[in-house]
Length: 359
Image 1 (tube, rainbow, N blue to C red):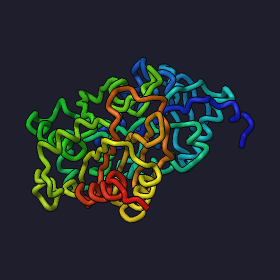
Image 2: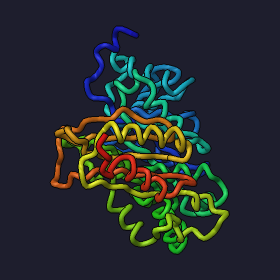
Image 3: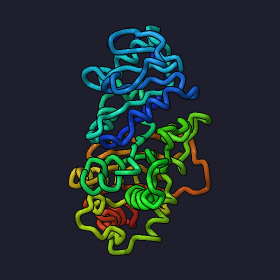
Image 4: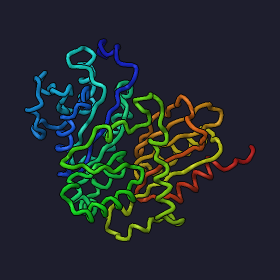
């Protein structure tokens, strides 16, 4: 390990992913974000500078990969592996070779599956100490997004795992088409906030700080992170007890395979039993579990435990400082593919929440 990195910040830097299908407006969105004053002290990792017009924002070129912008942002190319780029960026920050940054934004390619990137952030111990995943922002073309969801499974997965969905070109799309697309995205991922962008312009505050911790108060905002009410509204409004979403009536639609739901437990649960259950679930169904996140009331623990996983990768549980409300139920949100709520809920009740016979 480079000795300079021993002086790293005690608080991991929030990192956001910007993903979205080809032509959905990621480049335009990032270019407009770079002109915003409230994006200062942000490092943006992109695939190629040539895709983003930076000449009017450029202050100086630090190296072949890194340029400084008038806004106070740092823009750099992803040279080689993402892990290497993030490590190098942090080392340069500590050495003072580049200005200190308080946020990182990573843009993925249009055909990228965001899951491997999230796995990388979760699995690499040096990155885990320096960065924390704040949220996933997915751009969806308001003019062509509906058809892309039909024909490209990548676009479905990108939208399904998002914390924020940006409807690009909403200002030029037909209002009826935008409304229909919004309805479909709400069924696909009810917990994501959908934001319409006009000419690619969105306030950074609407996109970032989507994670568990509120950067203003430095405390956990469980309600915002889980958005449990959105899943409850969808369940009562559109989903039936058979576990099938009847709003998806076209067998050829890729998002007909996606389910989104929230499980709850009123009484404290035993951590050992939950850990065994989630390990069993991920080992047998991990490829079909796109995302899981939750807050647990663990028996014997004074404060809540936060959990977060993507497919087969599960982040180490995090003990939060305190409960912020009188609601101390355990709540676990799932977004799955080809896996209904019924089977998961039945096993959750059987292994975790139902009283166990005395041995």
